[in-house]
Image (cartoon, rainbow, N blue to C red; front, side, top):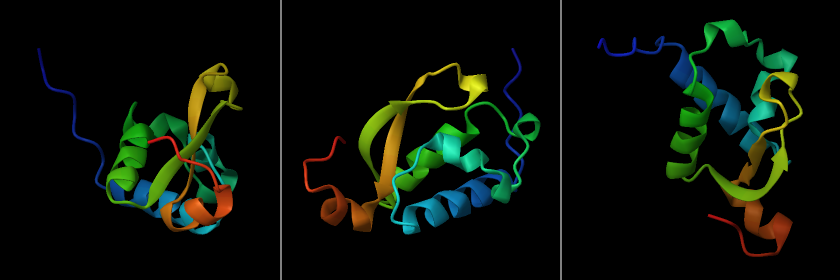
Length: 101
């Protein structure tokens, strides 16, 4: 069985930049927000799992923290459960309750 192809080199830095931008906004967000038109992403060009991997990288770097859960707004996700994230520096002041890790 062949290994999965490596992700395109542009994906990791682009997703990292988008997530950092969302985190800096001070507004809670989900993976659905990565697909906003202003970011110009085409889902057909993104490998399965790349968005989730980017969120986990940001969490491990301390950029974002989980602040809740909600269902997806995107039809392609069929209402699946998503984590709601916030920028790590904003989360304690904004939410005022223990965060889910």
